[in-house]
Amino acid sequence: MVHDFDVVVVGAGAAGIAATRALMAEGLSVTCLEASDRVGGRAHTDTDIFGIPFDMGAHWMHTEHVNALKTPGLALGLDLYAAPDNAQTYGLENDDILWDEVDKIKHAIDRAARADEEAELTTGIPTDRSLADIWENDSEWSFTAAMTFALSIARDLPDTSLRDMNAWEDGDDWFCREGFGHLVACCSQGLPIKLSTPVCALKSLPDGVQVTTASGNISARSVIVTVSVGVLAEDIIQFDPPLEADRRAALELITMGDYNHAGLLFRPGAIQVQPDTWLTYRLEPDASGVARGGGFLCNISNTGLTSFESSGSFSRDLQQTGPESAIEHALETLVGFFGSAIRKDFIKGHATAWRHEPYVLGSYAGSKPNGHNQRKVLRKPHAERVHFAGEATHASQHCSVSGAHLEGVRAARDVTAQLI
Ligand SMILES: Cc1cc2nc3c(=O)[nH]c(=O)nc-3n(C[C@H](O)[C@H](O)[C@H](O)COP(=O)(O)OP(=O)(O)OC[C@H]3O[C@@H](n4cnc5c(N)ncnc54)[C@H](O)[C@@H]3O)c2cc1C
Image (cartoon, rainbow, N blue to C red):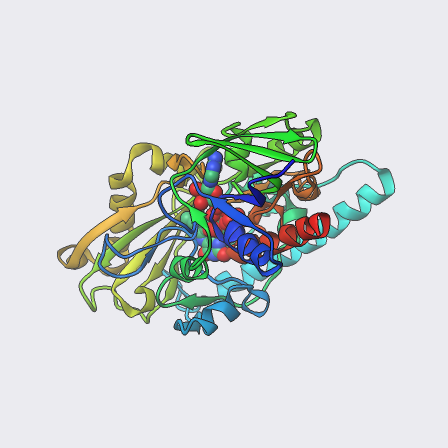
């Protein structure tokens, strides 16, 4: 049978963009179908809301030494720079007290993850504790320190797999002054991407795949699916044959967390800190163990924009109660630090709600305890010709743009090996 394309890529986020470019470089015919009316997915820089770049999703270029977007960003002539080492903690003259606690928990995570791995090897029984299992409430800053990990993984303490978290590659962060989403969008230039084209079904054929969209069917020899695990779990795409039982089970363990920004624009000088200061403060668990607070990235790239970062159940609740509650919570917390005078310098705010984005359904894919080895299940092909890629499938850079990009390239390599 002659197909319309060698490959259809579903989704034009970081993974889909990287896959499309890599397949084209191999001389394959490709189309990339994107449900929304823009590229980038969870890497999206808005410039309309504040008149300056505001990363609605990804902002930190994590693990700079292995970040796959650094080289393309520099080649594009974008202004990339190292995140300054200037974190501050409200209420602490010497914030080594907090960072020593953070180090202590980091070592405890590493020890426990290794012990669980060894226990599993000895007993054959899956063993993987949560952050809540090892966190010790032995100093007034220990909960805040534990929350720095929970914040980055977008989940509550009992909901985080230690082994999955420990697999995360550590390194320094960089920023892109024009916005990380802008960098990703630049990488899509010249690619055959069809916007506003949601894929609703994928049917395996004897020598290919039929892709169904609202505007008709397309056939291809192979497909790469890069949608979030939230979209997969909600059956927004119907698979024929249906997704396998082990992949379904993996989707119960590797799930979308909640992480959101509330951007607050102030007149210059209102928030008296250096550009890109990470500002933390003491967090207390509520009755159910949840921190009803987060952290601030202040004066982003010296623009006067400050972003309040929330995660887990608290972030989910803020999305539920609406953007105004997130903005007011962030503003009120900053008033507590800098005084009520900052209210007159406040220009406007905007809060994201990624859980409510219909083609994303959350922030990124963290692992529940005992989900640490499920990413490889999500990565394997389905019915031979349907391949999967995205942040969720990367073993050590999951939850990141770089991981998504690298997985897009990996899936393109797998498809190329199959087709050429
Ligand atoms: C608030 C927030 C902060 C973050 N911060 C960071 C950070 O600082 N640094 C970092 O590296 N990462 C960060 N991340 C994570 C990062 O954004 C993601 O890991 C990465 O962008 C995911 O890329 P992806 O290609 O795997 O998926 P996506 O970006 O979700 O791309 C998938 C695409 O598929 C499309 N799609 C969905 N369903 C369909 C369908 N049926 N048909 C066709 N298309 C469809 C979607 O619209 C989307 O464009 C953050 C994420 C969020 C939400």
